[in-house]
Image (tube, rainbow, N blue to C red; front, top):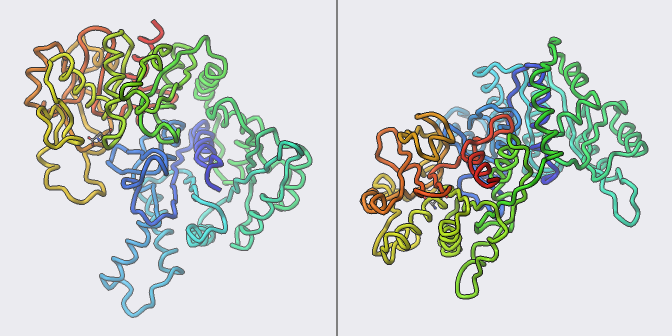
Length: 520
Ligand code: GLN
């Protein structure tokens, strides 16, 4: 079922295979009829993740990338919307002339075809397919049928992720929900090779014995996935149970040697996360703070950035509206070592974010503004340093006296909301050697992912620069502003989303720089 951590399990499997130098690629199936995640509300569905190739995908792709270190692509995301859309256009084109178009075989073949296309194009050693949702759902039923059929043609194994709840008063782990789920899988014609079991405490011998019995597998094939200190420890926990060697054997892969250097590096980082030397406190002032998943990548980027300086990071989530109006108190920010204002859409909370940024600028609190956060950094500067009264973003005030942030010309006629923002990887120049941006990245030409409609208004470059704002990065054609900085203290805003490319093995440079400044 959703919320169990299928993304983390899938990513850990990818990591296990990577530790043996197999080339493994994930495919994610999501049953909803949206074509992609671009139009979903982060407050309901969690963060919208963006890939280099402009695809707006499920946040699980973020976990895959953070574990595997690979840049993934949109064809690995299969949704109900894509499958139905494609079948309907084929029908209109006459591809099925004379037939009744049905879930089986047309929709199922479409799913199999998409998976096989990935196999043909990329030639990975293994594809790890994560089926979203719960067995028994209508939403994923045809996809489960598709993978059953896939197994008739390709070397395939099945892994059932389940859970054993334990009511606090009783304490005993109950296997009943797992048994029900397992029976539904059998009904769908699928016998799992492994059962991975989520639970709060370690799986008891008794529960393991029962799960094995009902699933027709040996007890060694029941894998514990109990709550851990850090999700990055899961591949190692799997290895302790020899899941890696059993997996490789069941997949029928040609034996390859364990890459000790990769394993050592991963272990070292997990060890630092579990035993940090001191902690930093980072305030995140945003509008979706009620659902942590809305900022999943920021949270993880901070974990990654803490590793090189051996620090743990505590995030203080602050609902931006609490920093607005008369009663607003900057005391909320007093105990923070750094401030992040993340991306977002719409006016709600933006005045509170602007107040937070002003506090950081005036009090020397290290600050990182991301996308909307960068835009509001520019607005704050225009209002309070350049004294441009009524400065705002055109997103919130169409008739503002000074639209420091405005709509790009290309965006002006755009009506449709799907996949129409400035998206994906954009190259960016960092011309100033002395800047925070250049020292963080250590090179002149970088690339980061984007997802926004509004931009820094070039007519205000002059006046903001004359008042000391530093424009430290632009697109390669210099037309769009990508990075701005305060001329003193640590304050930087970027139009990009650097958190989306942060991985445990390669922390995002700006987050690393922020934490370094914070620890001073
Ligand atoms: N709402 C802003 C825009 O569309 C910022 C978007 C974001 O923060 N991702 O430009």
